[in-house]
Amino acid sequence: MTSEFLEQAKLGDRRSLARILSALENGTLHINDAIEIIGGPSNSGKGHWQTLAITGAPGVGKSCLLDGLLRQWAKKGVRVAVLAVDPTSPRTGGALLGDRVRMTVVDDVELNDLIYLRSVATRKASGSVPFIVEDMTKLLLALGWQRVIIETVGAGQSEVRCAAIADRIVVVEGPARGDGIQAEKAGLLELADAVLVNKSDLPGAELHADEIRESFELGVGNAPPVLLTSAVENTGILEAAELLLALSSSGRSQRARWRERLLSHHERKILESPQLEELLEKLAKGSILLDEALQVISGGCDE
Ligand SMILES: Nc1nc2c(ncn2[C@@H]2O[C@H](COP(=O)(O)OP(=O)(O)OP(=O)(O)O)[C@@H](O)[C@H]2O)c(=O)[nH]1
Ligand SMILES: [Mg+2]
Image 1 (tube, rainbow, N blue to C red):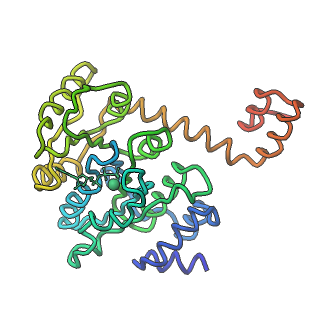
Image 2: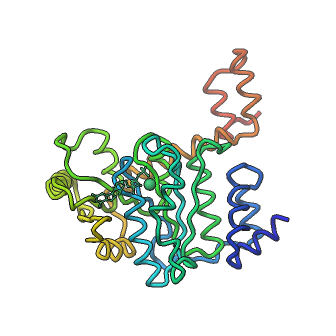
Image 3: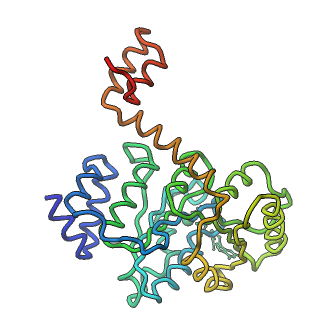
């Protein structure tokens, strides 16, 4: 049954694709099995990025911006799939419908063949969300989608890790709010390959762009580009779409990103260890030490 759905999904059938992605989400299908059936990645990437994360505070305009960017990319014939991580943000309380309204590009019959939108229901997910996103991304690429965009709110560890699985990270900001660049924001900006300061139609956007550029001057090497955009007035979108499509990785973001990936994979190894239950039992009884348990999980135990 699975192979039939995969076959159909590869031919472009959206319902089959949705089913397969749900199976990954529910843990009833393992990504390696899916890839084996598909016969390996059909998408070699040709030197450009394949996955890009769009991240930033709730309500900065990520979805609206993405709508404009997708339109530009689709016009160039690029096939793009979007994974929106937990669009049921507290701000909008169940925004999947809201996102459908924002993503007007999916109603454009000339372009929507080239676009696929999918939300990742973090509350329903049975495993760790960054891994589910990573697996879904691999599957979409293997099925022939050229680029995968991950939209995630840039707050909270799990969300930042979802961004860190991507080849490139774009941080979306809003106009200045008078609080400068505090620690949490600096942490997110550290991961950025590019920054879009959105809502440039509102006061304070240029000021904030300058603040960010200034903060980047302190680092070594090339600073990531900082662009002003307005999703509602459709300004700066064309430039942003061009820039992002060919975006190279900022050397500066590499360390921060690999740190997140390393932590994610460490966690995955623990959560997916076949001995996990047994080890938890032993730890609870006090019959082994934490170090010993870690050793078993990492395969470093020769018993
Ligand atoms: N003035 C102005 N408002 C904007 C702009 N872009 C988005 N908005 C508004 O900002 C609000 C949030 O936009 P979204 O695109 O949903 O923001 P988001 O970052 O995707 O939000 P979450 O997914 O909930 O984190 C909406 O009411 C938009 O109309 C812009 O460029 N200028
Ligand atoms: Mg959104």
